[in-house]
Length: 246
Ligand SMILES: [Mg+2]
Image (cartoon, rainbow, N blue to C red; front, side):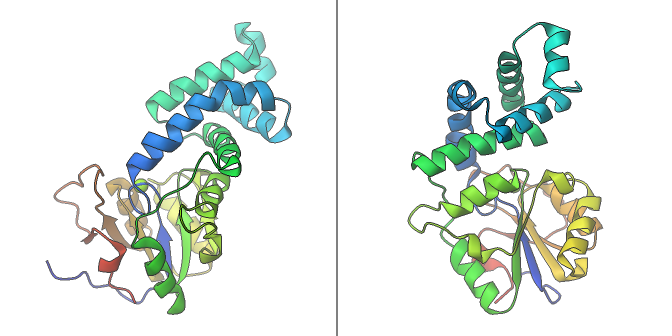
């Protein structure tokens, strides 16, 4: 297949799972780590304000006004309510803000202790460096919380801190990844016309939403990804080296 053609690009917006990092790393290493550590983490860190904030958001995401109201409505202890709810959502791979915040806090403790190290595909960092040298601004948009994204790119195996390569991070607080409004908001925040932003992701609905918002898109086909719909009308790449960029 001929290399995909792009109009001029001034910004590249990157998804993480299935695009810069393998889904299996996130699913086989990071999610199980958070699941394994959940109970112990809440037992020792419950009083911390960032943990309380995440758990209040989890209560709201579960349909209650607050942890207290959730507790009064059910009689269970707030910690147990959070544990049970988070386990259900993790099993469903739910993308909820409070859940993501709590997972991010658990990962933070893992990355800081060195028990967790992040992994990206070998073509990712060299490509980002080439793009940046060519004056292209690179940002991340992931359903993982911004705090989790920063931890991830702050602790890359064999490299260490890669955060200086990114001039911005977006998560679901700007909107869901399958909604085109989110991509319009990102372009506005970025200060670039959507047409000059290239979004790379492995999820068809995300690519369609970004395309509807006016962005250029490339579909990422990494080993272990869900196959893309055959009729998806966007160019596909198996490595960032195939992106028609510098
Ligand atoms: Mg993805």
